[in-house]
Image (tube, rainbow, N blue to C red; front, side):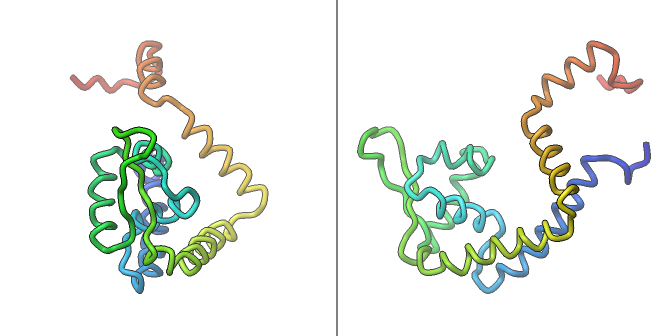
Length: 158
């Protein structure tokens, strides 16, 4: 298999291309793409527990904490103790974040629409099914099962 045919490389290259376009559109707001997606997730569900937010945006808690520190520093979010569970912390949008909600939500839909418009309806269906299948896969378990069955190829790295 040629390097250019590696699925991991192809997906990464496309993700970088999409991120570059998104980053350019976010420049006027002073947000990174990850901060943008965090705000978008909070626009859907304000006051979400940190653990649920981490799962929703597919980040580990340590990475999320650093991102929330910056969003809080910039006056966009705040963390508050859960009134029903003293051990849990919830993340809330501030009035500053609410003031850009319409523009950022519009940017989100325009960006997503632009990328999806490059695909036919059939291509979009196939793409969404393939992404869903890869997201559901337990890649570590599947790799171990493939290794045990001898399907991993000839590479034996200690």
